[in-house]
Length: 99
Image 1 (spheres, rainbow, N blue to C red):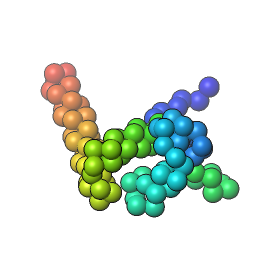
Image 2: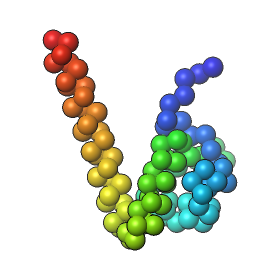
Image 3: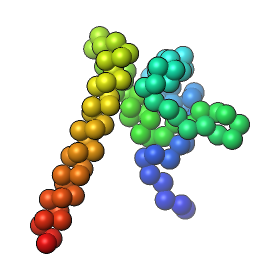
Image 4: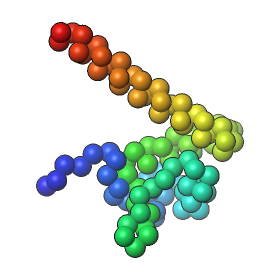
């Protein structure tokens, strides 16, 4: 079985909507506003990854907290940037511990 990571597009929009407990229209809205960009099959069908599902859940929570779409986009981008920086810091610490 090939290796699968969290960025592998797996889910159609109906399944993704069920996983995040949102209407399909909300997923389309989030995409149209640039909150995420699901992969597309050769036939143009949206395919969502586990990373997309996580981002959708975070976006939905922020929306439920009363944040508008522009604010959600900014918060999600900052969260992702922070996670990347934390990963890089961990890698640097590991390299220092090995060296």
